[in-house]
Image (cartoon, rainbow, N blue to C red; front, side, top):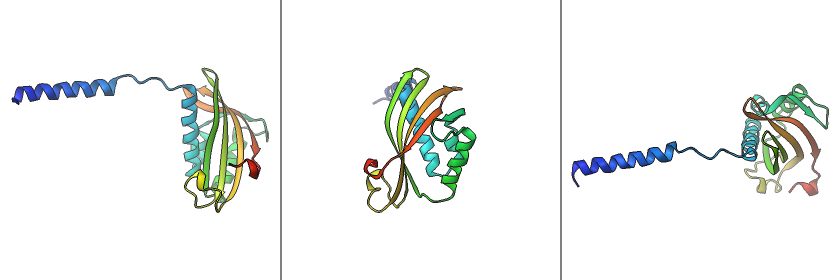
Length: 161
């Protein structure tokens, strides 16, 4: 193969890679964007990062159960995450429903456990578990998804898995 032909092949490959990398991606659905927000919030909770969790909570947040606003929710989250009572936090997104382009209803089960489990499936074996069903409404604020309203319900042992 001549040097000129090698140059053309490399140029064609570079153009092909450039087209693939620069081709616009399909925009994520509202549900997928909310799912990713929930994953980020869960990761922050596992890292005991109260600020990271609260990034997903609107300043106008209101709880239907507990009567919390954003400030009281922050205090509750900090109390649970920073006292060290639970070592593991697992999230199970049960349902996401975009009721309109800027509002998504979510149902999420949160599992808090004193355990060495690395996956939700291992959790029941040797753990002390507390679990909650959260129903939350996410809305877009400043281009990001945040919880504006939520309710919670403790899951009984038969409902855990």
